[in-house]
Image (cartoon, rainbow, N blue to C red; front, side, top):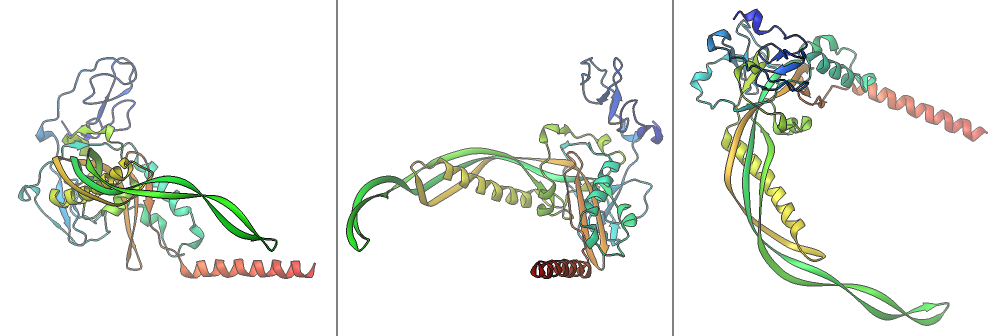
Length: 357
């Protein structure tokens, strides 16, 4: 198969032909591995997988600034890091890393044009306070679609807990007070708490938390464009990466596992707290161990735009499945101060005008 055929779109589809074909009955877009048409239900002939020699081998670059490792088009001889906008990159061979291959993938559902529109819309907000020398056209050219590696864990949490359980009870008491210079006896209801110690066991199964496998995309940034809908996961096939950048994971499984378990420890403690009987509780102690730990390495679609302005890196992200966007942008301090001064002048003028009326 010629390379031009690899990237040709199927009729009625806005994805590469290696990703989808057309239903022979109704012409609707059908993903390659789907057996039935989602539009009319007609059974499809499952196309043969592309032979390894049909797809050109990618080139791999490692950013020496942020640590991202990305597979690019074989014709691309140089690379600027999509994660930190650095040009300090070196080529490497993935065969020497010994990393495990991805197991699942979610394809891009947002087009590059839609992602670019989201960037312009996002950048236009508070545009009055942007620096005048920020050339947005040149910045927009750096928007890249990247398959970013994520670790997904599932595990069983087993906990032993102990706490002081409080139960409310009410009593009526009398008291005296002064009313109009006279002593008056009144009654009031007082709530008391009876405390007693309790301990027990709790277990729950946790999954669905994604840990970024990219040094170039820290966890706190990845969480800004979550969630991804994991019901859309497909078994990984190399053709999904045709025409896109794809990053090798640089966060090892053991490191990602610690991050995931820390998250699940918080969830388990909250679950134990919600499990407590009585009206209130205190001194909750939870000891948790994890069993049946399973992990999946998955590739998720992200549009990345990193650019430098006055020696600082700014970043904009779009979830390639849902379209959720997040980012940071430079703001002009002088323009903000000018706007504040103008607003203060208007308020002062209005106050003087009202004072004369």
